[in-house]
Length: 379
Picture (cartoon, helix red, strand yellow):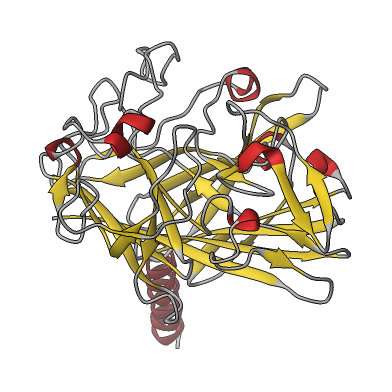
């Protein structure tokens, strides 16, 4: 009887150990630590989402900023592949939107003006003569209310913010929710939701700068990019779309087949001269499909790859042309010219003032929802 009891106890122990090991292998988790204090003395936390493979995404509830993202290369090495800072004060004072949630309106609005139902709204002019990325204090510079949720399939950080009526000049009390979710397939999902009590406009996006080499002292010209778009939006000298939708065929803007960023970026081209490189919106194919592949970036030397899936009509590809070496990096260096690239899924710039562009209007009783997924891998 004693032997039988011992055997049953041993069997139970082995079974528990097996279950524990299985759970650890599939473990998705979120840890939390203090990142700093704002100028208003608000404590800001950093949330670290980790999956079973070792991929790690760090997000702070100031601006919903992705401060680091550790991705594996073809040799099994994990390195941080997004530009950012180690301290909050830099994000408050000098960040070019590194890793942030952008709103209420991502990208530019001409002269900071738009009209709804015959009424003209005036926004902050914070980029030459135009309005950019939500204004002087857009969603990238506000404190979000965080909560966590960990399930078998994913670890999620939920961020909420209420933008008051006429904040930065936008009408309507806007309730916004952004959910970052990491799964064991190395996919980072960004889901946006919003509701308003007054007719308004909205265009949210995520502004991470990628350098898949993991070395921020290097530029991104050797990265190979694809964009699933037959057309792009030409711009004027202040980077506002002209309203034309132009074919990419025969232009430096043709990324339908993978090519390095450096292949055409320095050729003589009026469009490239306006942004000192790529800083344009592409008109994505298959807009009626919903979530689909829209772009990718690949770094041949490390083997790192990021594939972008989205339900949005456009993507702003920015090649880091305004980085000038003045910002201190996380690696005790500085962020030099074209040391990061952005793939910002969104509606088109200046859509409120272009009747032929897809609508960005949100009415009371409607719900704004959109999703973008960044899938990381190597080859």
